[in-house]
Figure 1 (cartoon, helix red, strand yellow):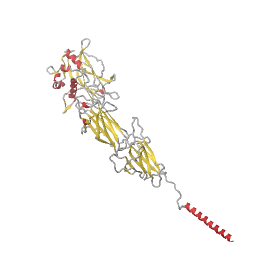
Figure 2 (cartoon, one colour):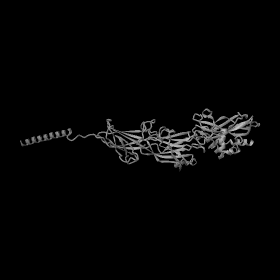
Figure 3 (tube, helix red, strand yellow):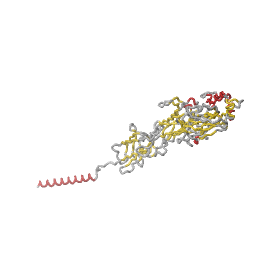
Figure 4 (tube, one colour):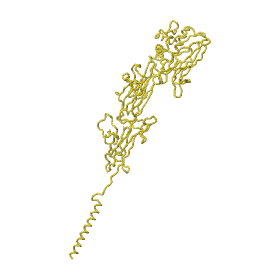
Length: 545
């Protein structure tokens, strides 16, 4: 019996199986006199909390091994499988149970090395049998002791958050549900031992319900944040791979991306890679074929309620091929539905939200959680307002627009009187370089990127002259916001539209031929000529006399 006790005491120190982190709490224990009612504390560490410090989720403790006590000392067989577990152990791990000796825990189990794959496999499969429902039933029916972490005092030591809870004699499987992280199952016990005086007492010890990994997350980046209509946006997603226990039932891993109406995805461009481990060159081996298209069933709730994703990919391969992250890349085109920002509170139809969907309770198919991330890109507009000197609207003025560093005029699609936008790649006919003011003297040009432009007036309205310098330099600039990204609001205005006034003048006029000025000169000339003739006649007559 001493050997059995000794072996079990060493075995139960294998806690929080499949951990990535091994944390040592170093907690002291308070011994209680051994009896059938004896209890002691077990420390549960690695607790997830909210920013306010409250615990997240529920710890479910399932007693799977009983301890036999008579009076104030253990009685053989000291350790037996609990009634709800014994049948399952006898079917799946026959060597771990002595059914002829009150379902005693055998040395085959007690002698398993703490870090053995056999012990890990047993606990994973036990957790699976307890939590996984098939046709409304679980393989093992046990009622857990529930610990609501939000109601417990969360303590911290050496950066590790933990709680303590009191349990009776026995071994327990610990499963955590309802947080945003994926927890490994934990295994620990309150067991009999002797104190320094040789008296039988209880001993509890640390159970480390530590996280197998940090909270799975997703990060979306774009090649740039400002675009013209027709340009291509390249998106990159960096997605943490959920680190599931080997025998988890539902290893859900779905990436669902939602592009707004102003973006058109190129489904053929979607590529998925393993993370290389190099931040500067993150692209590793391509694993696109290991992901399949995913359709949300009627029973499933779309992350964006009532809206189908632009694409959704579900991992359908062996998790063993995955790195700790995957990289997703794809392209989308800014289309004619892109809307210029009116204010930072409005939708510009160039939002893009992506969700990582994973199962934070991997022993049920209903425990999935969605982690969102989003990026917003922007396009801009130019409004030319043509007036006369008196502020009257000038219809029919013609302009061209080009980038300062380009010798070629930009081409546009006309969408209405005085209304134009940049073309899509497929729009190659019916384009125009000439921009004509409408009855209000306005030209609206949408779908421009940031940059330096030259607006050139090529034809003035009837009765007006072209300016001496018909070129106007325009700069579209968007200061970065607090995150170092554009906000869609141009520097010179209160929104994403740049207004450029252009004033025309009428030419001055010389006197017209045949007008009053010419008549005066003619009359004066005739009078002078007549006077000269009269004078000449008079002089001639005097000479004759």
